[in-house]
Length: 93
View 1 (tube, helix red, strand yellow):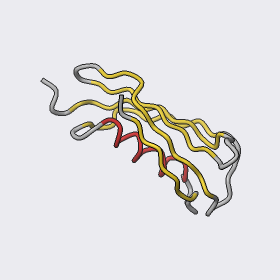
View 2 (cartoon, helix red, strand yellow):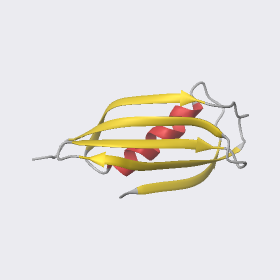
View 3 (tube, one colour):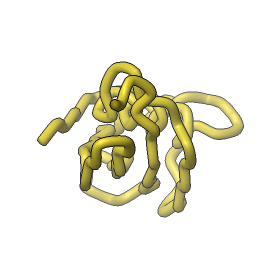
View 4 (cartoon, one colour):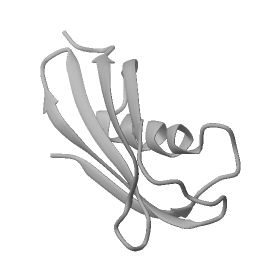
């Protein structure tokens, strides 16, 4: 099962959690996977520039779809955001 985890800082933008989660979810979905849907649920607020950890993994994969999940965590473990995405495998046969 593919998973990613990386340390980063919370960006100063209108949708910082989406900007951190979407690339991690895409990475675990793999090459040739196109996003079909992305849902984000927000937790506690984080200040721009705060240290965070982004985690993502694959919950389930079929021949044509990948179901991925992720979360953004503060250093103390507080959940800043969670995300779930579905990707279509473009090269699936």
